[in-house]
Length: 438
Image (cartoon, rainbow, N blue to C red; front, side, top):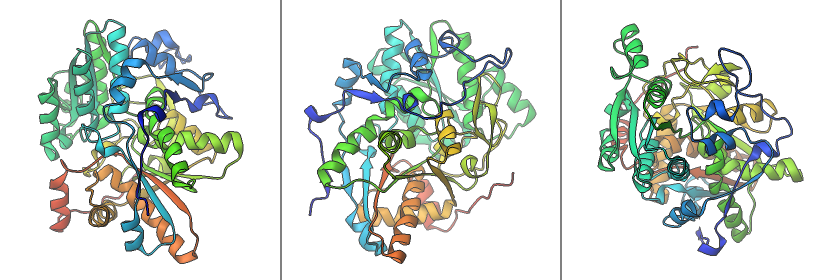
């Protein structure tokens, strides 16, 4: 009874997948807020590395070569295991077969390193010396801090203030790798000062931190902004997850009926889902795709599809997306990586087209699922990943009721070993649910 399915080095993918090239309905373009014209590579290159800007707007090339230096770094921790969750299946009493892709095993503990490495590589190739970013719970900030050091770049991170307070060791990790870290909103940028002036007790959001990071990038010589989710070039880099999982599922002799991932902006969801979704598009397969988001931040299930800014201050291009509004202030849940007001452009179009669905899950249900997973599989998941586990358990219980033997695949996007304060609060009965009041 095999539990883990591995790939050797010769089987690792050498290209990323770009779903934009295969989408039957291309997403609407990002537009410049002043001119209302579609933005081009030159516009985005003021903020991002030029190669990332090119990938962002690429609707023609389905396959993009992974640069050799990036592939060499991937080989330190990839391919990550695909695992059959026999213990969880037994605890639920389901006929479903549950698999998870374990992205928690890399040195930084989450999937975020998959995009941090290429973004820093492209910046280095362009002659950039400094990178900056935002981070919520800190997985992306930690990954970027390390990747910047790998490629000899200086790194500055704006971490959502409430997440910094909830998870102080994540900022310690970033500083260990040599990054500077500010709680957002801060007094170090115009955007931060304006937010604090309006609301002195603002707990911060990914939108506020993005504004501060973009302001720093655009006012600092030789500095570029890097992003850990939402945009297409990030999903392209993360497709390494699903491409590996395809090969590993073949080794297991199965193919997923349902693919599930947690959802903040879309990086790990797109990473595991898009390589499988291409078979729905091109071959007529019927795999179901579910994005699990917090009940208190339900842009997929309760957001409005329209053009909106990707940040609180309005520094980004206008993006066509499902959004709760760029000034949305999320509740202080522990899944800090999912507290973002909007969904990525690609995911938003796919949701409009009915090629995927979203579910919103209360905080207490996520920790109940996380605790069951920890006790049956021996891994303490990140609160973000616990949303995917909760959605998986819902599906597995439906199979138990109907007798269907579905194959369910979910992405374990990161471990929760720096989130133990949240687990303590859950075990002590101190956590509560937060409903969306929009």
